[in-house]
Image 1 (tube, one colour):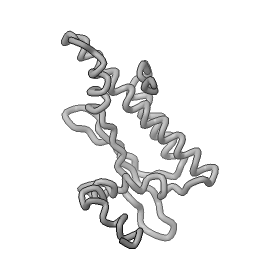
Image 2 (image 1 turned 180 degrees about the vertical axis):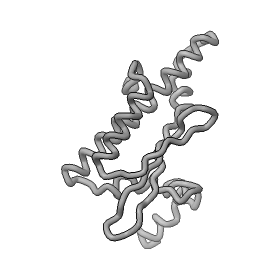
Image 3 (image 1 turned 135 degrees about the vertical axis):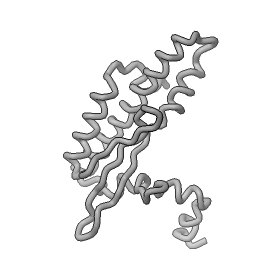
Image 4 (image 1 turned 90 degrees about the vertical axis):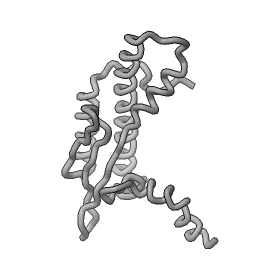
Length: 148
């Protein structure tokens, strides 16, 4: 199966703008971009919970993983090929996030999911996401939910 958006030519900046528009239309507030070494690594924002405080969400794009997957299909790439591939990985990775966000916002709009339900794995406590906390604890909370 080919990778979706593998050959995207849409600039990352335009993709980020589309993600922001989808999030705003879906009810997100306080959108912020997080950079590391000059490269965008995550989009953070807040979503309201009825009658309660805002919940921080951190939506990362693992561009290095996208790059590794794309590079694995190359035999012995040249340095300039790797530079182009890294740029393509950025476009592809963020485009995948855009598609995912737009589908999730459609699910919320069509009342197939709640906003908090969609973004719960990405809820951010300032240190890690909810998913990372579950994973770091060996998913023990899920065992409790099953009654184990």
